[in-house]
Image (tube, rainbow, N blue to C red; front, side):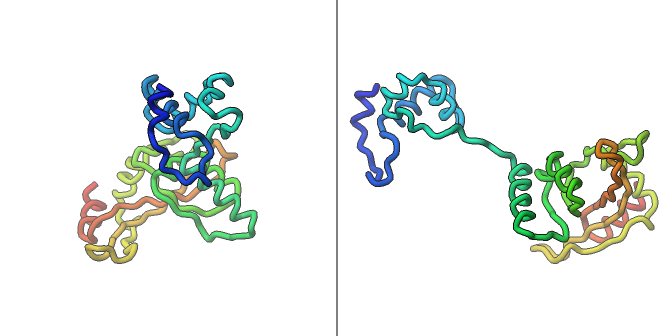
Length: 202
């Protein structure tokens, strides 16, 4: 295989070459044949080779450390940590459901008393008190029985007009973090009529 793959011309600029093309191609082919289906898996296959095999492929001791993969929530923690170290102050942090589902990120903000607005799934569990827990969907259904608890506000104009939301505030308590009190914002999105209908019908 090495002999065959050595015939493949190398299109790279010699000034930027770190590893031999023949070795890279051999690793890729063998790793895929062994079941690797991603760049990370191919890298792991290479790291699992013994020193002699790596030498034969032309890598020697030049292989970089295994890559460290981070979730978006963990990357957000890294970014905010650096920002705090530089003296940056946020009024609040915001993010979609990918960040809202990251427990580490929410606890990171809680520990620093950082205000944040992170979207969570409808099945996200809320703790109203030590004895009462329910999903966001259930909490919204309960709040919807009293239309006075909701305020309809626009989140700004979108491609199809105003993005109307109904907002309600719900006090919760995080029993896992020294009983710290939180205020959860519940939202329903739709036209003003749809929102009022949903609030009065449920």
